[in-house]
Amino acid sequence: MTDDLLPDLTDTPALLREAAERARAGGDELAALAHLIAAEALESHRAGVAGEGAQRIGMVATGYFMKGDHARARRWYELALGLDARQAVAWQNLAAIHAKAGNDGHAERCRERAYALQRVYVEASGQPSRRVLLLCAGRSSGNVPFDLLVPTPHNGRIKYAIDYAPPAEDAALPPFDLVFNAVGDPDIAEPLRARIAQFAQTCARPLLNVPERVAVTRRDRLPALLDGLQDVQTAPCLRIDPADPIHDKVLDEARQRIAAAGMRLPLLVRPVATHGGEGLVRCDTEAQLEAALAAQAGSFYVSAFRDTRDADGSCRKYRVAFVDRVPYPYHLAISPHWMVHYFSAGMEGVRVKLEEEARFLADPVAALGERGAGAIAAIGRRLDLDYAGVDFTMLPDGSVFVFEANATMLVHRERPDGELAHKNAYVQRIAEAFEAMMRARMATRV
Image 1 (cartoon, rainbow, N blue to C red):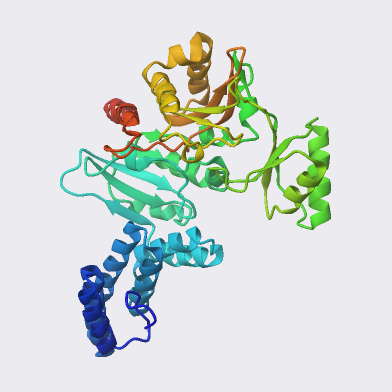
Image 2 (cartoon, one colour):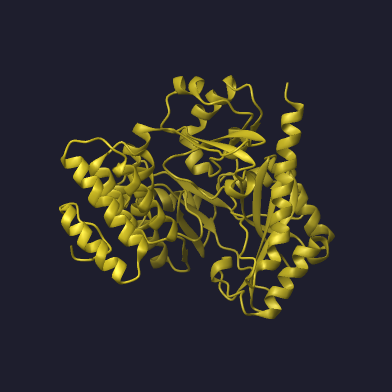
């Protein structure tokens, strides 16, 4: 045992008990308890006695997983699964650990094991007001914030990994009152479109975010979707699905498509189904473009770059959430960099930035102007989704430039004692609006 806090699959119960004593002497009661549980589980397993030891070890692993200690969580999950490989949640969380570490092959194999065992996961306690079926893609969670929008215990949640479930399984689902299609990323939803549509045809309950409305928010389809809206601008975007993976042929295909679209440098290149700037490259030169295109391992997007720096040299990205087509302000990120994300914009500790954000949250119409606010409201109506969002900036002429708009916009609460706690009242408005919409949909169902 190279680390007293990490179990080894070859450890004996005696070694595990020794490790428990060392952990207790070091003040780590969780590790001590974990090793004692593991020792008892190993003894029962080797004696051929059935018990709950593997499940208890899995619970220890989940404790570490929830704390973000993935190294320890992984080893405890591996021990638990070595004793009993029928623990779907353990495989699921182990897949998430491997995915975060970039071990995509391991992650996919773990997901296959998890969803071969179980496609339905029920999260309910007490007497929830309603039971909501969440249509999920087991291969990717995306950014749909259902923890905020469909919170427990007020709601009983039934997560259904529909990408792994055969149609016959739809009829065997637990009872539910409402369906929320949480497969909000159109790239992830695309191969599942027919499957979700098939589910929708036989579902007698209200369905939020119908799949055909999610599909048209794909990056390359968004300009056409928003075309004709007054005071709304977008950047041309191409999706390249290489017909041949050979390097030179990919480059030729991409260059031909870019030229045919009349797109010029600078350009942005990114893999499909990515968010938060993952894999996003700005290409200002032909050499940079060639390198970015050559680095793509599958389908990718090429879009025109728009310099949206304001007079003060900063780049601003506003985010508005739509609930039942109505806009609700969520945040404003102000960054010195062209790739604007709230987490990297340096908002905390900068009073002038936080004050500007607070003004936007308190009065979006005043912050955006009548034209800008009207354009955002029109985008919500054009998206025609029950939950969606838009990232955008304001141009000098008062019009809106859209970065992206889709059903997978992340919204979450901040620490109540933190510097960003001012956002929580507006996050709560989004949560309350979604709750009101769910009540209304259930009240009008036939």
